[in-house]
Image (tube, rainbow, N blue to C red; front, top):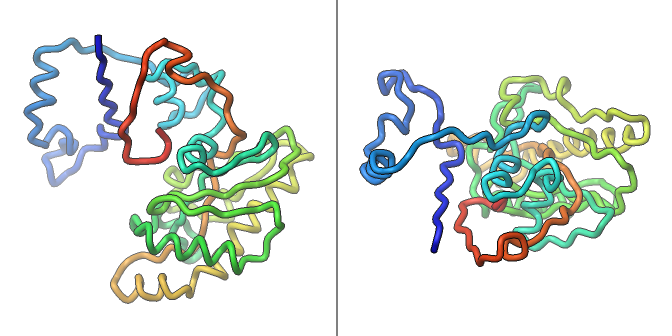
Length: 253
C-alpha cells in the first residue's frame, strides 16, 4: 500500500477583511480539497508536544513519526543538512534570515521576500567583509533563508534567539540574543554583535540601493535563530521499513 501525506504548513492563515473576514483558504476555489474533505474523515492531531515552541520543525517531525522531544535540535541544522553544509559534532547551525531594520525596529522578517540571487550577493559580502572570528561562517540558502555556522562551539547551552516572524515592530535592542548561563554569555554577545555589525556591510550595498530605488524594502540586517547541533535520527526506511520521498518548497523538509 502507498501513502500520500499533504501538509499545508501555514495554510490556515488569518481572516482578511477584504474577503469578508474569511481566511484565504476559506475564500479560495479548491475543488480537490473539498472533495477530499467530503469523502474522507476529519479529526484533530496534536503535533507539538507541551514544552516545545510551535513551529514547522517540531510539527513536521511529529507528522513524519519522529518524536520532536527526542530528535529536534533546532531548525538550523535540519535546513543546513538539506543544503549539504558540513557540520561536525561541535558545530552549531543557525537559520539566518535577511531582514529589514528601520530606526532600530524589526520591520520585515523576509526583507520583502528578497530574491535568492540578491540575497546571495549579500551573504557573500558578509562572508568577505564582516569582521568576525574564523569560526563563524555564512552560507547562502534561498530567498531570505540562510545560514550562520558557529564552528567548534564548546558550550553546553545553545543560545536561543527570538523568532523574527514573531517580533515584527519590536525594537531590535529588546530582542537581541541573551544567554541563560554564564558560560554561553560570550556566544550571545557574539551573535548580538554580528546582528548589529551586519548593517554596516548591508545598508548601502548595491543590491539594497537598487531595491530602495524600485520601492522594495532593503535586506539590511541579519537575524540568526533556530540554532542547534547536528541531529542523530534514523532514516525513514530504518524506522518504518518503507521507502519515502518528499517534495518541499523549503530546506526544512
